[in-house]
Length: 539
Image (cartoon, rainbow, N blue to C red; front, side, top):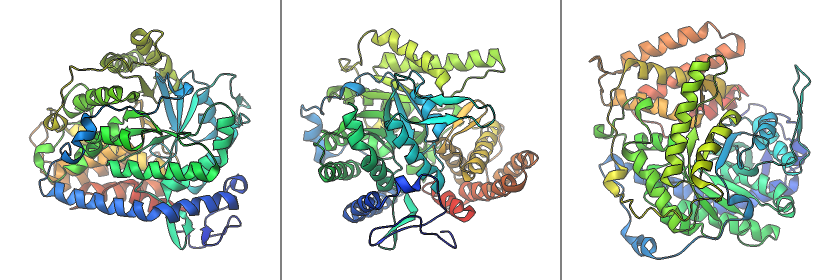
């Protein structure tokens, strides 16, 4: 926490808002909105902490050799015929969704991109500085009211919303994170409740009046009980603001291996608020490594070889389509991390070809839509889904009775080598991403791929897994702490040539944290937890 925190706004009893003065805080952190945040924290914060403790118990059992199964206690629910609520009109066709952080220019460009949906992200692509969070909420207020504009300082170019824009969906941070600039009864509040409460409180009524609604993406759930908590938050929030049940709609990212075993149950818990499930592929890979960290038989090959057409990733995506469509829910595909390469036509063509093949696979498998990280990929993704969907808004009629996926399929490890290049790339990405993240940028282009917290998590988790189990590189060398430190030092030395001042300080912090997370005896749960403490220190 900041050494000399400053009270930013009049706060209701028991609430303290700490941190630097932020433009827009006077209309985001109002006493009424803060009272709503505090109300949610007091009602639901205890359950959140209990569920986080439950996660630790599950991890201990996995470390001891237990493996996930489809639960007997919910067998009847999985076998029964039921459906979620019908999608609202502006979430029926979601064939292309674009994602990105909540900075002003990004919001305008994404809403104008031609995508069907824009997911404004407070989580993996947003570094949680207090400025980013408060300004992001103010930016979304303006976007909802269509008053948002941005002038590029160096060119004077003005950005405004087009007449027709994408449907807005917001992703709050995950249950495991806290917002330490907001204390409720002396304790940091849930980051999830903070992000949700401010957006919902300020915008839900306007959204409904505009013919849309408060729509959300829910990240990193690990069980139906965590989905139930969100559903109870939704019920209470709607009642408090006088909105009908079901006004809120939420798509759950299936980005943990444990959630893949409870997809039916998660849809059931959120059934009157659900709008589908999404293949959060990058965090899913990270979760696979983390949950089975103690077992050397789960060691993965180079990150670039862990693709959606093999092993646990292929089967989970097919099961997601089958599960969703049986329940009348949208089955969303995963992120294309490539970005256009304008300076090299040949490399750009190769990158676009990869995106096209990935989106064709998703569309032909039965997905109802997909994600892209850059406006330049919207047209490519749309072409592939248009080719399969035609005039249909979705593929809810594609039931995939041919898909048979069991527990063993969801745990199948893809084959492939571990190389020095893969090790070096993971360490470079980890350090470069953290250096940018500590400076407030959570969405970083590296080697023509858009890296975010999820891909950084894969990078550091793979290195930890390889050295923990003494994996061997393709050239025969064993991955150990000494090798990791040597290659990390080489990568940082190259980066240091382009760093000075604050950038150099952030690089030093990023190097130390990367080394710690990759070589410690125990695997840390989330990279962003210790990194957040560094953000507070830098503030």
